[in-house]
Length: 241
Image (cartoon, rainbow, N blue to C red; front, side):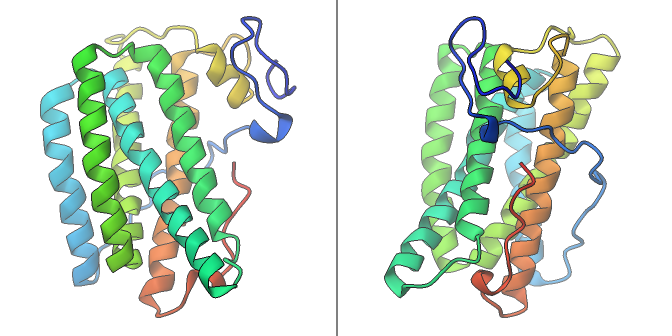
């Protein structure tokens, strides 16, 4: 039951009460970090370059696009959280809540993926593409975070901005009747505490709001590094999930 901490009627998806939440859909979706440094411009150009092959391959198949997007989006939080975790152990210091914040982000993105797997039903070649892209992106982002956490977080911030755009286009296609507004998967109803009558449109709305929160968190982290500070000295914005 939604928010109740028990399983669905199919006895497949189980969440503790603290693992479910109601997404804040009132967040500003139009916020954009204007690139004012060379590093920011590199981050933005990198993300724009990554968008082109995605548009070419998926075009209007927004369910499959969302699935691919989330396999990539789930990587940065895990990489950042893992590296901060190891640094905390090495240096015997606290993280200011950033380990928890980034791992929460990774888990949230993973739940996005689990939801859209129910919607898209990917073919074998799309699964193979996911495997390939994840392998490349994980290693590239791992190296990037070691070299420049500031650039890594800025790239993630811009990736989330692109995610907001993609989900907005997804909503437009549903509203125009070009895509079916099917009932929401049970996992989404449980995870976001949605009503049992929720539809895919409701799911896209809460997922888009999540991406906006991730956008703000990662741009904030990049700003901290840009000011020459350490993340641990600025409390992490935890608790928005």
